[in-house]
Amino acid sequence: MNKERNLLSELDLRILARLKDEPAISNMMLAQDVGLTRSQLLSRLNRIESLDIAHVVALTDIGAGGANLFYVYVAVGQRQVDEVAAEIAKSPYSTTIAGLLGSDDLLVALRLPAHHAAASAVDILRNIDGVTSLRTLQVLRYYTMKNEHMRFSTSAHESLEARTARLVDELAGIQIDDLDYALIAEFQINGRVPVRELSQRYGLTQGAIRYRLKNLHAKKVLRLGLVIDPVALGLRCWAAFEIDVVPSAVDSVVADLDRNSWNVLLMLSNGASMLQCVALTTDIEAMREALRYVRSLEGVNRVEPQLFSRIYYNEPHWGLFGD
Image 1 (cartoon, helix red, strand yellow):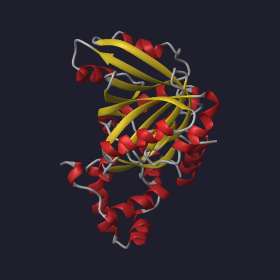
Image 2 (spheres, one colour):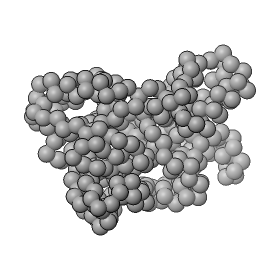
Image 3 (cartoon, helix red, strand yellow):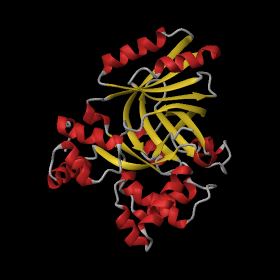
Image 4 (cartoon, one colour):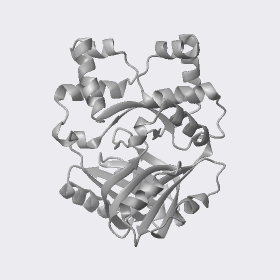
C-alpha cells in the first residue's frame, strides 16, 4: 500500500502529536486525550504502524560510548548503484545509505564504536566492487538531528535476538549488562512495550525494570521518541548541502539554519565544507528556495547541493540527547 495515498488525517496527527510529547503515555490516557475509545485508538495506531508511517522507538545518543561518526560520499562505476548500496548495507556500522543525483552516487553514514580506528570507515567501503572514489568526512559535532523525520528500513523488523546481538558491538565500551542490552532491544522492536510485560518476561519487579530504564537514559543509550515517515506528512524532497563557510561565521550560520523546519540534520565536519546539512521539503521548488536561502547567508562562501534519489537503508534508532 502506498503511503502517499494514505496521508494522515487531522485526528491521526493529533494522536501523533500527543505521542511525540509523551511517547510512553498509556493507550487509555491517549484515547481519553484525543476523544476516542481505547479500541478506536488501537485500530488507528495499528494501521499507522502496519504501514510503517510512524513508530515510537528507542533512541540511543549517536555519540554514546565515544563513537566516531563519518559521512562518506561514494562514486560508483561499472556496477549498479543499487547493488553497491545493498552491499554497504550489510555492514553493521551503516546507519543511513541514500542515493544521490549529483557528482556522487551515494551518501553513507557510518557509526564506528570507539574501539575502531578512524581508518576503518574507509576500509569498510574501499574494497567493495564498483566503488571508484570516496570522500570521507568525520563528524565533529551535531547541531540538529530531527528524529521525527525518518524513513524506515527493514532493520526495523529484525528479531529480538538479532537486534540484541547488534547492540553488543554498537554500544561497546558502555557499562551495561546483558539484561540492559535485552531491554534496549525490546524497546527498539516496540517502543511502547508495557513495563508490566517486561517485568513478567524477565522475572523482575516493575520497579526494578523502571530503575534500569532510568539508568539507561542517564547513560544516553535509551530514550523513547516518535519517528514519522515524512512522506506521510507530504515531505518528499531530500537534499544534502555541503556548505563552505567562513570559520568565524559558523555559529551565526548554524543559528540561521536552525530557524528553518527543512533543516533536519546539521553537523560540523573536518571536510573542506565545514557544515553538512540535510534538507527535507515538500517539493523541488521548496528545495530551490531553501538552497537560495542558504546561499544568501552572510559568511557562506559556497553551497554544493545533491538531491537524494532514494533512501536505500536507514537505522532509525540514533538521536541527540543533549547535555
